[in-house]
Amino acid sequence: MPTHEVANQPPPLEDDDLYVSDPVLDRLVTAQGAGHRRDDLARFGKMAGSARYRRWGVEANRNPPVLHTHDRYGNRVDEVDFHPSWHHLLETSVSAGMHSVSWDGKPGGWVARAVFNYLDSQIEAGHWCPISMTGAAIASLRKQPELAAQWEPLLTSTVYDPSPVPISGKRGALTGMGMTEKQGGSDVRANTTTATALDTDGEYVITGHKWFTSAPMCDGFLILAQTDAGLTCFLMPRWLDDGRRNTIRIQRLKDKLGNRSNASAELEFEQTWARRIGEEGGGIPTILGMVSATRLDCVAGSAALMRQAVSQAVHHTRYRHAFGASLIDKPLMRNVLADLEIESRAATVMMMRLAGAFDRADGDPTEAAIRRILTPVAKYWVTKRAPAVIGEALECLGGNGYVEDSGLPRLFRESPLNAIWEGSGNVIALDVMRVLARERDSAMVLLDEIETLIGGHPGISTFVTELRGDMESPDEVGARRLTEKIAVAAQAAQLAAFGDDVLFDAFVVTRIQGDRGHLLGTLPTTVDLAALLGT
Image 1 (cartoon, rainbow, N blue to C red):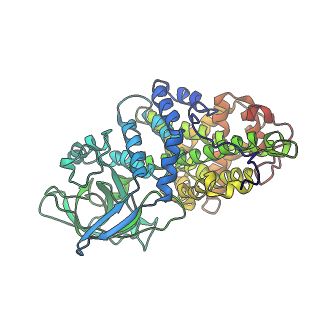
Image 2: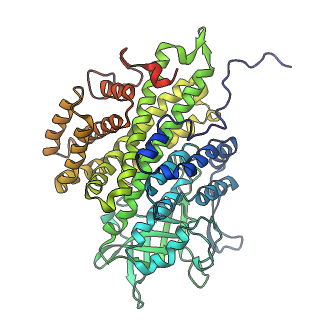
Image 3: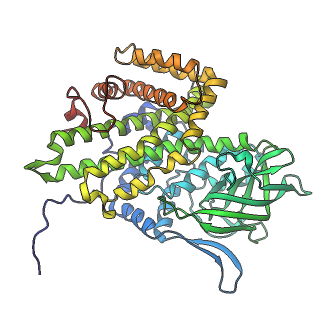
């Protein structure tokens, strides 16, 4: 029997146009030279916010991948089964060209890649792992032209083809990556996996293991292994040209905190066939082309999670009433929401500046320098901010935010991943220190841009002057704090360039000046909350 009517519950945030509803995205796309791609991005943003696409994201995570190591007769099969929604998501993303847009020869490709990621990962981040690695692998493959000629047409194809056959029978292909091992983790020079050359030039057999390889159903993997000359990069196909399975044994799938739609596996190799990429002993510089691109994806992915969490919080508080008024009209709640908006928008402008540097780096030494320093800076800072922002946004929904149906728990579980993937916080902060020590000119180019964009603003010029002094003598102990200061200054500069005075002033007064509270929601009364919230 009915006992009450359900009232004062917000409707689900569905059929929300992720591109049009974003407060800063469209202007940034144009500012970073990708305005001609706007229609494709906007079309996908509308589709990604639909109820159907959101449902695929939920289903892919509620039905995680299942590993089958053997068939009914005891033969090794090493297959992973995915829910149909996983395939729907990948097919949609591949057909939109997300994995290949940065290689289509048109301006703004890296900006488009970042925006696609930013829109897509708001709804389901796990399937972006093979999308990310596939596009990023091309940079490394091009160091071995004959391999690139064979694989690149498939890796840039907009046909999603999950069929388990050699690439000679494929219409499109995806790639994964295996770097880390049990005994070393980020210290890949400690790898023990070995590669032995065969009589045919460039062909090897590999024996060893990989501790963390995502998307094991990809068609090929970039692998690091030791030769007599040192750590070397290889392309390892899942299927051999004669139709046989390559000896890639999936020992188990990781039981992860988040990213549950995506299979991450422990792999074992025994005389597993592979082709060398680059020179023997040059594995790290060869694979760094791939790593650099995936670090941009970490930034975009974290910005995406923040944007969706903040959107959910604002949506909920617009409809939810408490103590005689809408939650969004309560002064303290408005303070929290406005602070969340500042953090989300600052992450987005930094993501877009970095993507623009990727686009322009090949023909512009200044942009190449900015890409070198801003990649680890942005990767460190934006990925670190995501858990705090999403946790606070979840709290805006109260108990409802702690329930799976709200979608916030999945965003929260996903939020630490990008800070770990492709180098955890200490590794990335130390990379910033290496740039400052070995490529100081790159760092100074970024600082010069910051000073130019700030234009002597009294609220930040002193901070930047102090930062210049700090960058003259970097040290390991202070690596995290210095990286944070560079990131905050860079965000302030990009907000100044964006031209929203309210947003810029609010950022400066809360992130750089004064004695700001340590938690979100502590904005001073001078900040124009109505302008930030659009109410």
